[in-house]
Image (cartoon, rainbow, N blue to C red; front, top):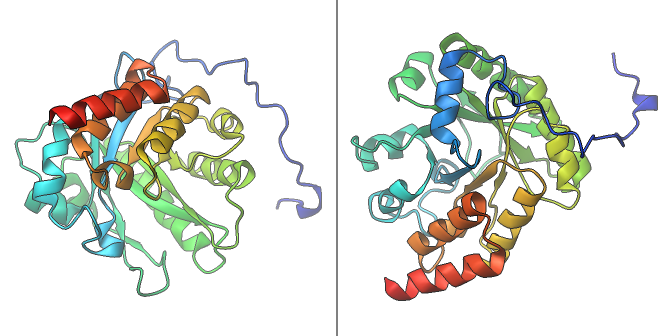
Amino acid sequence: MADLDDIRDGDNFGLNSPADTSKFYLKGMNSMPWGLKNRMSRIFNRKSGRTVMLAFDHGFLMGPTSGLERIDLNIAPLAEHADCLMGCRGTIRTMIPAENTQPVCLRADTGTTILTEMNHNVLLGEEEMISMNASALAAMISIGDAATESKTIANFSRLVDLGNKYDIPVMCVTAVGKDMARDARYFGLASRVGAENGASIVKTYYTEGFENVVAATPVPVVIAGGKKLPEIEALEMAYNAIQCGAAGVDMGRNVFQSEAPVAMIKAVSGVVHDGLKPAEGLELFETLKNEA
């Protein structure tokens, strides 16, 4: 049992000593099986080692929120510009064309909405998840929420068991506990818990000190886009996260709620994959928006 009187914050993150990727280009994957590596290589660009995931799973919590009223009109046209699509089974099946070849990260937990207490989720059935031909599965953990922390971690661990059975990567989505500070200490703890429980990818929020969060998480970390920001601020967030070692972004509202979503996802990709600085990304956004 942990000694709660002697928990010391980490202070030696080895920021100048990169993780060993000599056997596979992604962090933490050297000794993973072929099937899992193959699926990870669909999600993460083999040249940059990064990904631009397009998240549109918000509807299972929020309903038809702005930008997601019509997945077929607002999200399907963006699919070819994303490295991976993250959504729920219903919208993927009904509104993403079956001939789509972009990999899918399937949201694999469900259960509550914004109208009730959050995070009381359960997992989809095993056969259902396999039938979706997902390249990755995703579920959240709610660290710091006394009512749901243990349940969400147990859910996540069961999902990892399933992923290990079929060599499917599992992405840990770190939910923000209402009583937890949104800082590197909290996100570092939540991210590490996800990795300790078997995550192949961790999705968390960018914050000051993010380089320590990334360094202490032994698998690729992607950042959540969070609430809608002005385009330059979203590009700055993506750029800063990449500079801290993030392996990409999983953005939703900052893309599909943009005034020019296709231009925005291309600008984000320029920052993530091509090393564009935020001002250069914004210039690309403005150019593409004006050409549309």
